[in-house]
Image (tube, rainbow, N blue to C red; front, side, top):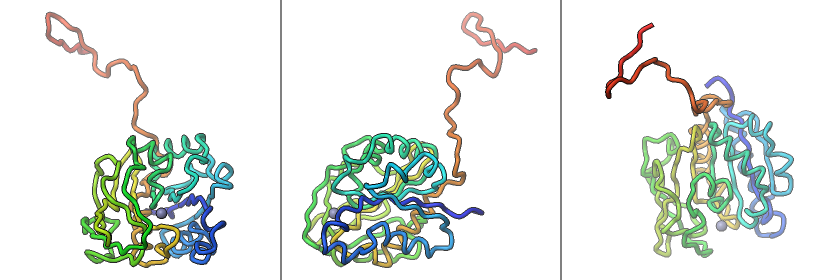
Length: 258
Ligand code: ZN
């Protein structure tokens, strides 16, 4: 691809600004940590960051029209994200914008809208358990550079059943120390847009500082980038005249040749 990939990151930025333990791990916010490793990638161009506080000003139609891939982290205040912004995000994904949903973003408005199921449904436990990810798509762009399995030393436990629609492709399955298993990496296509969900990244653990997780997210941004940023969806104009002329006589079609 000739152009650089423009990325926009939405991070709620509430835990980092209100809980000292989280601020110590992410002094520049989770969005700052994500931006920090993505901007080192030569394939990536402009990176915009939005938080709950300024998302209405930053996540405009114009900014999202100029975005190839949107990365989303939210937890406490999904309901405070403006519906007008969610409408723009969902339409942009249907028109081709890539969408990477991280951790508790499974319960965000745009992911729920795009999945059409109760994506907030899952088992969870904040116990700092070890998570072992299994790469079950070794030939997929998102897993390039990874081993067949790797560990996140401490993360929030998520467990099945998870209320997602059947993924187009399952990328990771995670085993947690407490016995749960989880479909922790999965892809879908909606309209022209590619979507990737990654489970890892609870705010009280330094998960986004881990090199394997950074690689997964950078790979996912490249995978989800549309060929055309401003894509015209192939939806057709509605009720139209036939392209070929014909007459109907006694149950058979007789083409009219002009
Ligand atoms: Zn969490």
